[in-house]
Image (tube, rainbow, N blue to C red; front, side):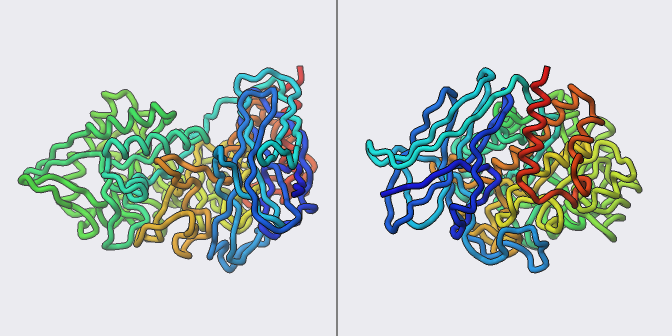
Length: 545
């Protein structure tokens, strides 16, 4: 058995038909003293057969780990009218799952290129040139050895000030692991998945005060996950916020700072109420849902009692500035009158102590005062930037696939990571994505296995709905895309660190220097060398005395 191996960058996506010789070697780089640096080992066994190998990591660095890159299927890798910056638009297998390597090793198949994902945590390490030796072996016999040189420079990334949320679907954890809602087992799993999100830059958490009215078919419902317990007595309501308090405690223990409350109106129009369960005359039942007119007297009365209870709770917890309310996700066009009516009730009830935000694309909603914090799709951001909207937030989802950054399985990793440069350049305050762990089909009509269905049953391009997989024992399994997105956040923090040293204007000049077209949300170089080179230049300037 003969294995050929080499180091390649974390931006390479190695498909099953990738030629080993076509992969550019990437043997050295720099990193700051407080980041996670990623690279890959590509290897191939130029003969038939299947074998099991183990990996050894030999380095003066203390925290280096390797995971095996595994493949998942996609029936819908792209929409038909996609742009030309994709790896493949054909159904097939794509690299994404980062499988932990057990003492039993990992499988190797002949006549195919495979990869290991190597992560170096530089926290606490001293500036120096370090050699990271990766050995592939079976038993005591070594079949391949590769060395990567990582120089840790005397500099640190700036703290992350960007508020970043990736919607956390609490019900999907119940469904996948078959545990009762908010049981001890559920809380344990929730904590693990929050910790993984926080470790990858997420500092805001979607909080299901009521079961989120998101991605749910009209007339349908999702597994109940409701933190606010309600008791109904005629037209009076009492609220128990014990579970909400525990949610906040678990989230904070695992690195979360901000909380966005699930919308109190249905998605795409704000016409109805979300599913709300309550105890009435000793019976636990649904009191509001798709059948409820969101502007009828009964629901308005409910909200007029709920809002003061939430305000009082958050004020006592001294966290008003950490809480963001939602009204309805992605309103547009003729939704404005209804949305504005809902916003006026909310603004009147909570005052100026809290934030209110929603994902939208229409500038009119902001101009007419219907939303205080617009979260704008990246392909519509320029209008808001041209109008100097302060503290702008952005998002992308399945609709931003022409010219913009995104993270579909079929997209090159540079298209994922370049967002960090864009967030810095336009001084974006927050970024939202809807899919941390949406393991349902479109409209939540059925539950899916994310290892076998990656496109919500051919509804969204694969990769849009989630960036994390369910592992055994409630352990999250990271995706390649989650790690690359965190690289984007680290790039952003490196740029802010350099700004603190040389000023913003010089950093902006550096970003666009040598480019035929300046960086915009819908325009950036399609060249891995450019982005890797930019980061190296930033690290060099950070370390200069």
